[in-house]
Amino acid sequence: MNRNVQLLWNGLIPENPIFRLALSMCPAVAVTTSVENGLMLGLAVIFVQVFSSCTVAMFRSYIHPRIRIPAYVIVIALWVTVIDMILPVISPDVYKKVELFVKLIVVFAIIISRLELFASKEPLVPSFFDGLGMGLGFLLGLVVTGAIRELLGTGRIFGFEVLDSGPLLIMILPAGGFFVIGFIMAAFNYIEYKITGKIPTSGGAH
Amino acid sequence: MKKTRFSRATAILGTLVLLTLLCVNFSEAALSGSFKKDNEITISFGTPVDEAWAKNTANYNVFQKTDPDIRVPVESVTLDSRKTSADLKFQDPLNLSSEYTVEAKDVLSEGKTLGKLEFSVKKSQAQILFTILLGAMLINNFVFTKYLGLCIFFGVSQKKDTAIGMGITFTLVMVLSAIFCWAIYTYILKALQLQFLQIIVFIGTVAIFVQAMDTILRKVNPFLFKKLGVYLVLIVTNCIILAVPLINVDSGYGLFESMTEGLGAGVGFALALFLMACVREKLELCRVPAVFKGLPIAFVVAGMFALAFLGFSGLSIF
Image (tube, rainbow over the protein chains, first blue to last red):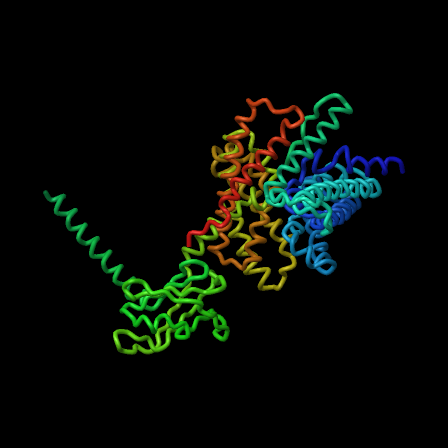
């Protein structure tokens, strides 16, 4: 049981998909103009990640290693199609804003890399927790970025007035996303430098 | 001597052809108008018309060709100095991608009534395609304003050579796969009413297509394969390659429009990649704060590029 908790924690901070592994950057910049959008896409990614991890873990002995990549892609595409049909029913307004990215979850590097690195080798239960951890880490990344951008860009969080100052429009513009992520990454590096005493080389970005 | 005569004959012939073309153009212009801005239409009557008649907005009926019942109200009319053409101004912006009809009632020209004249106003195919190309390439650049394909963008923008290689390979694959996906969507998915399968089918098509390109290139042109082969495999993980077919389907584009969107996306991506590689090569020599080294500074630079590309928004040529 202890290992499962560790897997969860691992995905949340030490191997955070966005700030540490630097995988799947596109949605992290694109949909985070508000917390709400980030939350929606984050939940969709958790769903797809957990279910694909479980599916691959269950059928891992039947998937021939040579065709594993196409097989993983089909599994992911299957769950993405499912969530793409569920989301518009739950929350049509927010779905309209993140529609393209929900469909693009298929090509998010984080999901396929977890399937390749973890779920294809481990049994069902650890795979479930690894998927959940990675999904939560992704959600955390989206929500933090979204919160910073919404707070500075409009002075609100979840649509509630928080800051009294004038809005900093650049945070809502495309450029703001790049700036915020760059600075959060640097902050993560700085914290690690303070703890371990050495500068980490940032992730491989793919 | 012979040569000069020949060239003179060619010049005369050319002028004649040009004149005929112009004449054809003029004779057509009498019954067709063009968009001037997004809320202005220019029509030309061919002969001078009565000013008081032309200024009366009640004399014009404007509607979209698809639904003639919905009239678009004309706000004001201005005549040009020769009184042969008029600018109709509208309160609301028009839908520039659809066809409009302008009916002018009882046209008064030099004291005579010419009866009803009809003008059809629409963008030519070339204009539409150019708009799509420009939109995908600069105005809505996939990397800087839609944030797609960032993974590859940050991954291979360290050197100019790799950036150029990736850009060319990507543009080629993008155009071809946009055509493929369009064909499959139109002739298979739509025909069988299986649109909900589009995600699975598109990603499958792209993956198969890239694998096929890889195999064919290896056999047919090993030299080119050595240059581009590395990037081919990477392309499957690029979101743009899946986003373009999805956008094409959403906008209801036809074959040529889909192709142009693919081309614009490819060229726009190559441009972004090249610009970024130029900066990052210089960045290697700079003293960057230690915690910003690598990806964080790359993100900040990309942010500045995004700011610059913001200048393209609102750019419209037609």
